[in-house]
Length: 233
Image 1 (cartoon, one colour):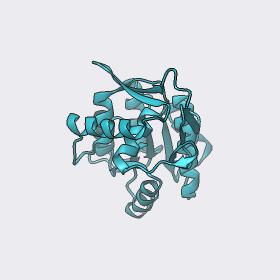
Image 2: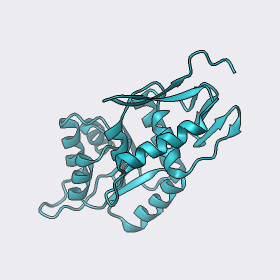
Image 3: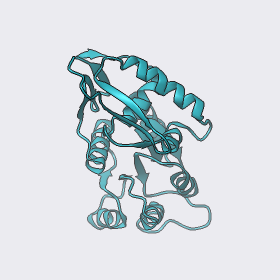
């Protein structure tokens, strides 16, 4: 998943970053309201982890936390990215304020990192309508374990090829826009060009030969992974 982590506590931010990266996620960090607002507007994410008590250069924090404003702005422009609010503010009225502003879930500090990961999976699964176990032909994805397999055997992939195939399988049968895929796999300090993306797709196609799954290019639309019609092997 591509995740935006909005947290101003440097120690907690670093711990969460390592945990999420170890789980295989791509993470962008924002430590202020301005950064969070900018990143969220210019980059598509699968989920946002949002601290409410964020610093802002020109305004004092509100009783409910400055993070609510960037959440309200995202929802007002129609952005439905699932949001998990992480905050020390855990009174009932504060939880209600966060949920009313558009949060999908709420987790009070301190929390276990394993619970953050589990809640993220649940949010994305609910939003995308995607199960933890997915199959196309003989290709299977276990989202919880973050592993691909072919006929029960682990399919080892380089990191970028893994990310491309993950996006195509989340869920399978969905047309994935080429530009949106490039943007999601790019970072703010790097850009994944069309040639690089096409190279990853080409290598994946070779690895999926006789898998019963095929990556098809839809000109002007993007890519879709689907079963090979008539494949009985």
